[in-house]
Image (tube, rainbow, N blue to C red):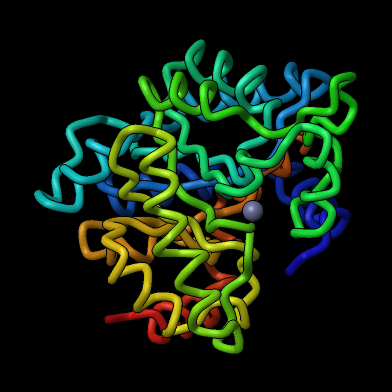
Length: 292
Ligand SMILES: [Zn+2]
C-alpha cells in the first residue's frame, strides 16, 4: 500500500505533465465508455466540503453516476447507455459526516452514493461510538466526525433509511470485522449472514450489497466469500483497484481509495489507471481465492 505522502509526490509529478488527465482520457478511448469505476471514501467532514465539492465537479465532467439498478443492468446486458463511463462513489463505515456533507454534495453533482454500514456501529449507543470505532478498526482521522459535540459519529438507522430512498445502503459486516480464514466459522457467519438479516430488519428492505473490511490481501478468504454467497448478497465490493466490465463477477467489484481531504491531483492520480497496475497481482490472487 502506498503511503499518502508518496502518492502526493507521484501525483504532483504526474499532474505536472497532465499525465493523469491524459491517462483517464486514454482509458476512455481504449474502452469507449463501456466500463465502470468504483471509488471509496470514508468520513467527509464539513471542513473538507469545499475540497470534496471540487473533486465531485471534476468527477462529474468525466463520469456518469451509477446506482444499483444501473450496475445490475450493465452486468446483465453489457450495455452502458451513457457517453461517459459510470462511477460508483462509495463510503465505508457509515459516518454521520457522510449524511451531513457527502449526501448533499453528491445530489448537487447528480451522483448516487453507496454507503456501507457496520451494523453494530450504527446500533451502538452514542456514548459508546468513539470507543467502538477505536476497538473495531474504524478510523477516527479527519472526516470521521469525532468532534461532534454530542459524540454521535455514526449515521442513525433513520438517517440510513432516508439515504436509501435515493442512494444505496449496503452491509459492511456486523462489527467491522476483517475476514481472514482464521476467524472462527461461527463468528464469520455472525459477521456476514446475521449482519445481513439484522440490517434488513432495521432498514425494512433487501440489502443485496456487501463490502469487505480492511482490504489487505490476508483479510480476504474463501470461507468468507462462501458465506457472502450463502447469505444471498448479490454484489460485493473489494479494494483492489480495477475497472468493472460486463465480465466482472458481481461479487468482485473493485474500488480505488480516495479521501475528501486529498488534493485533486491525488484523486486524478488514483483514477489514472496506475493503481490498477499496482494492484494487478493482488487483485488476481484475491479474485481466484474468492471465486465460487
Ligand atoms: Zn471500513
